[in-house]
Structure formats: structure tokens, C-alpha cells
Length: 451
Image 1 (cartoon, rainbow, N blue to C red):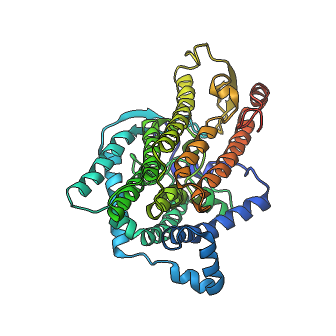
Image 2: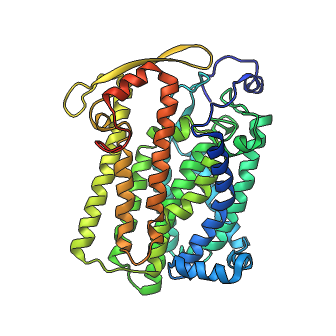
Image 3: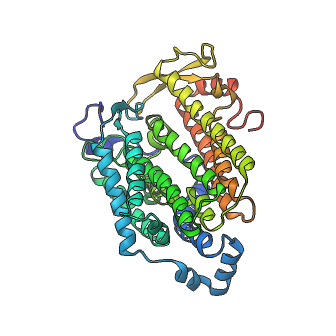
């Protein structure tokens, strides 16, 4: 963390920091949702893997099995972590951590934090992404490591991630109490809330290893790309060819992840990094939920190849690429607007904007520019629309024989609509009357003309 506000020590500053902001939802909804996610997400990951790989993708078959065998049935299908699984996880994690620390990259300053700190990053995600994929494919091509092994041990890997990541979140909770990395930390006074939402905004190990960059970007998003390639290779080894449905799915997911790492520094200014603290919600989600749920359409296609035909495959591919581009252009437009302090062109015109002032938790008055034209004049979170559609287009090659491949699309829709509400409520609290002016000018939250 660079450019912190002067303080006697990070720990003392954390002790003096205010409690975390109030939750968006009512206390009942908040506690119910937190306890449900803490208890239901881990077994769901295993059940999804089992259904995709061993139950022909049929939710009904898995349901009937559990109805007949009960909790013992769940215990029987839950694979225990193996040494092979742990080696794969630690090998991948260590490789990505080394790349994060050692690869060169430009210095990037994140947005000013609520406590007035300015986090500093090294933008080397695209380099790490290229090195990772080249290394992975190279190991396969030269016969050093077969990616099919990852697929064959996938259940054990997910099981190890479920347990290991839970322990990691306990470490983050303890670290937030005893050794916070900056003054952007503090306790709500409730153990469950602190564990779920996190104690620290920018936890680091030493001065340079940012934990959220590792969990969110270098492990979570990187594993998405690696597993997409893995599923493609596994289908090739099983069938001697790769179906056009798998090629479309893999291509679109890789294009999306490539876009992410191209724009990674922009991601560091989003809600995930700049506002959500490092707890179970973010870190466990990126370490477990992303590698399992986000990659699930490809996991399904391994055993369910679909021949789309050239016209349908190309149509889906082009539609998906268009949605990914629009999603990227939304973020690029806002990032350029912020970088130039509003002195740029948006769709060929001078941007429409609102100058909003706000106070940090330390009482300093600062200003922000709110963009109200271009994509951001259509709705306050329009970029979520092409993101959801992108997910649909890399899932639809599976066609509609089973429901489960579409779980990710449904989950993503719920996640982004909830995030839009949380972001609106946070901005309303932060900007006050200026946010009301913004909402009057851009009345729709996500879908123009509808919501």
C-alpha cells in the first residue's frame, strides 16, 4: 500500500477505523443469506461436479440418488482431497505467485480508499496470462504434463479447494485482527459478518504481494482459462477430435479472460477490489466458485459434444465476441473518462458529466466525475448486460438437453443485479444529492427502459 495517510502504525490505525458500513439488505436477509452461502456453497460445488461428470448432466438423476441414499449418499460421492490434487493446486498457486511478484509491469495507482489510502499495483497480469497458457500448452505438447490429469482429478481438486480455501479465509480473518496491512481495515463487531465480508480492504503479505490480486486475478481468473483449455484437451483425448460446440465455448471464454487481463488495472478500480473486503464472499468465491461454477459449461461439454454446424457455430461465436467487446468498451470508456478527468470524447462528443463531492472517513473533501453519456447514459450499470449475454453465448453451444449448464448464467444474473443494488446504495451514501442528480439523469439501473 503506497501513499497512506500518516499514522503511528497500521494496527493502531485499524483499531481506530470505523466499523464496516451497514449492509444493504435487512439484518434477517443478510444473516440468512450469509449462513446459507457458507453452508450450501461447498456441497453445491461437489454436487455440480458429480452431476456434470458422473450423472450425465442430469439434475434429476443426482436428486434421485440423494433421495434414495440421503446424507450418506452425499458423503459417498464427495471425493477426499488427494496428494495429486494438492500438488496440482500448490504447483499452480506457487507458479502464479512467482509470476505476480517477478514479472515486470507498469506501476498503477488504484482509487483513493475510504480511509484516504492509495493502493499501488504492478500491472503484469497480461504477461502472467501469456506465460501461463504458453507454459501449460507447452508442457502438454512436449509430453511433460498431460492436462487430462487435471480433469481426471477434478473432484479431488475441488474438494481440496473447498477445505483449503476455508482455512485460508480463517487466516485472513485472524490477520485482519492482529496484523492489518493498512488503515482500511476494522471489525463490525460480529464474527460472522467479519468472516464473510472480510476485515481488510487491501491485505498484503509484505509490501508487494497483494492477496486480493492473487485470489481474484492470478488464481481465480487464471484457473478459468487453464480449465477451459483442459476441457478442450480432455475431449480431444477422449474422442480424437474437438466438437465445434467445445471450440466455440473455449474460444469465447478465452477471449473473455484475455479481455480481463488486458483490462486488469481497470478491474482494480471496481467494486470487487476497491470496496469489497477480503473475506469468504470474495476470496473463497474466487478460489473455489470461479474454477468450478464459471467453467461448468465447458465441464459439461467434455462428455456431451454437440455438433452445431458451421453456420450456427459461427453465429454464436460472433454474437459472443460482440458482447465481450461491448462489455470491454463500456469499461474502457469509463476508464478513459476518469484518466483524462473528463477531457475526452465519448461517442464522438464531449462527455456529459456530474461533478460530485464527497468526504472520506478522515473528513477530507474530494471530488469525482460521474459519466452520464455513452454506454453510461443508457443505464447506470449497462456493462452488466453484455456480460450476462456473453455468458449465455458460451453456454448455448450445449443446447438445451439439460438445465445445469445454464446455472452459471442464472447465478451471474442474480450476482450482478445484487451488485448493482449494492453499488447504487454505496454511491447514494457516498455522494448524497449528487447521486440523486445522477439517477434523475440516468434513471435505469441495468436494463435500459426496463430496470
